[in-house]
Amino acid sequence: MAYVVTQPCCADASCVLACPVNCIHPAPGEPGFAEAEMVYIDPRSCVGCGACATACPVDAIKPDTALAPDQQVFAAMNAEYYDVFSHPDRTPLAVVGKQRRLLGDRGEGEVAVAVVGAGPAGLYTADELLKHPEVRVDVLDRLPTPYGLLRAGVAPDHQHTKQAERLFGQIESQPGFRYLLGAEVGRDLLHEELTARYDAVVYAVGASTDRRLGIDGEDLAGSVSATDLVGWYNGHPDHQDLGLDLSHERVVVVGNGNVALDAARILTAAPERLVGTDIARPAYEAIASSGVREVVVLGRRGPAQAAFTVPELVGLVGLADAGEIDVVVETNGAGLGESQTERLLADLAARTPRPGLRRIVLRFLTVPVRVLGEGGRVTGLEVARTRLEADADGVWRAVVTDETEVLATGTVLRSVGYRARPVPGLPFDEAVGTVPHERGRVEPGTYVVGWIKRGPTGFLGTNKSDAAETVTSILDDLDAGTARRRGTTERADDLPALLRSRGVAAHGRRGWRAIDAEERRRGEAEGRPRSKITTRPELDEVAAGAKRPRRYAGLVRG
Ligand code: NAP
Image 1 (cartoon, rainbow, N blue to C red):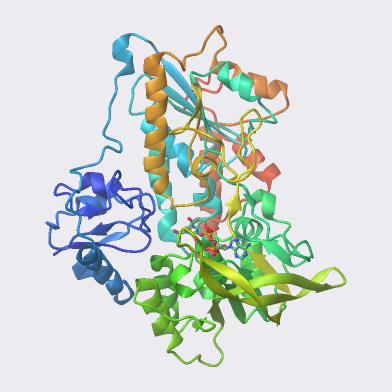
Image 2 (image 1 turned 60 degrees about the vertical axis):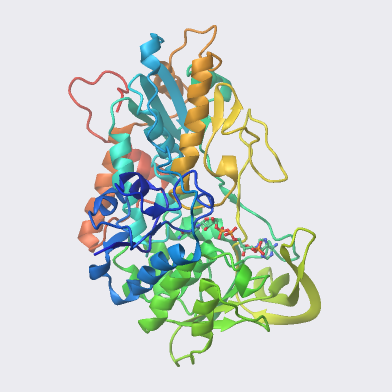
């Protein structure tokens, strides 16, 4: 028996470290790890011990004897990875999570680190830092809830991925970990106020806004960004006033990355597929009564350049096989080659749509030209056909032709990538939308990790190796003495009082646990994992009502 990595591999490589025979690749440090859509188990070397399955935070690893029919394709994909790539120079085991540098041995006392942003990148960073017993980590977030895009980005029908909550729950329970939730750096606290109190400040603030299309009509009512839509169906308190009109038959999504596929799946989902998830209730009701029959997903380049990943496409094939939706492929004249993506698309293209089913149309070689509207609302999208041309670096680019048509629609969803906002007090590269850094170091004492560091790419688990790199830079600077608090006696313990004096009621782990328990309680009554609280005042109220232990002494650690 061999184990198989299936959907929803998070690529954090926990399994790689757990494997006693080094049969899971690509491993951190090996070519292709950072871009890998998933990791793969070599069926010929796997000894079937199951250590990887135990280590996997999202339950994506199964014995090949226990694969469901729609998971069989992953057995072939795992094996094929080793047939296609030979890796003679594989490093034995990469170092993620293995280093242990004992700062305390040098008598330097406690090290205090602030991590700004409680999403996956921030929590993996805290975890990496807390491997050193002398380090204390305060994790701040502007929201009263942690977990960032795990809570507010991962699609509600991907509950397996959301199981990473268990891992984050373990991270936040470690000694030396403290939350300050509900405090926004740059508004409630200044960067300088953090650097005065902490030996190191790490920004893990992600990319909270969307890239623009730059075409006419983009701001009409009914032209919606993926950031807003994803936040809406995931119950993010900042995105509940979306006012989405789903009375039209067709939605057009611009861009064909994984976010576009998430949105297309959710907007074509039958209510039964969503009812048992943690989808926000207003979104559930709107989608359950929606008139949408077709979601057209536009890729400006061809099938071979599609931005979605194979595991996500496999998920769509599974829905089509189960008779839940049709998936229609319109290559627009592009050929279909031999890559896994293209083979799956060819299989879909050969199918005949079934009457009565909602459908997702994957259309290629098409760009939006302008959003059309009447009375301030979207009525259609003018699109143009493209052709591919290789640039000087051999990269295929879409060249717009003058062949245009209008797709009638009431909703245009712009899903062309996220974009970070500048961090007050830090430099910002407007061209790429990231903070300039060297291996996570902005300057000694200030660091970045996650999307604000590398841009909006990669998967949940990509943040683990990313965090390891930034933490190495922090440790190097602490070793060199360049990252220590200098010339100040201010301590982080005064932050809750300082925030209160500014009218900001930040809370800690107890407040978050109260929200979590309340959401689970409401969810249980509705037969689903949780029912999210979606307004800021109610989130704050539930957190504030959390019972304090008798020996309460300020906002104690943990
Ligand atoms: P993405 O993967 O970067 O895809 C962006 C898409 O927008 C591409 O198809 C891109 O086309 C297109 N695009 C960009 N500018 C355009 C323009 N001006 N006109 C037309 N099309 C344009 O971004 P994403 O979907 O937002 O995903 C962000 C990251 O999160 C990705 O790494 C993704 O894999 C990850 N994610 C993962 C999961 C998962 O694992 N389940 C789920 C959601 C997100 P070109 O390729 O031609 O540039």
